[in-house]
Image (cartoon, rainbow, N blue to C red):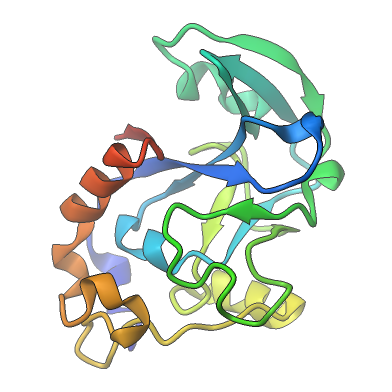
Length: 195
């Protein structure tokens, strides 16, 4: 499939990705990642941070969240929160997480998948300073996948319909799925915000 979706306007969303680590340090901790392509969330393979960006751990309710320090006011606007402290990008790189959809989670046979990576293209000028990566879609995602050895999926066919790899949406046109995916993320308590 070509990148014809790039010129379309999709809603921007912030999604909660649970850290999947043993020990008390990261329990009830989520990485908040921002995307302008909600239809790619079921195809998530990695998250990306930038070593040049400062990150923090913030508590809201009984959950902790990791975001870029420069994005606190925007991401937590209107929500009661407490900054717990700085978190280096280096300490996040390599951590495993659980994506909202288990489409590929634990199924690719690739230990590189569903980890946090460094990417120079991540900034703290919008979103959360953390990117959701779906290597099948987007040039920078694909380049990161090649660089670190991520699985490149075949989630859409040449007509833009989900393949059997994404069984729950198989045969559905990707552009028609934004609202359904956003609603499911909200039901799963994995949607932080829709813009």
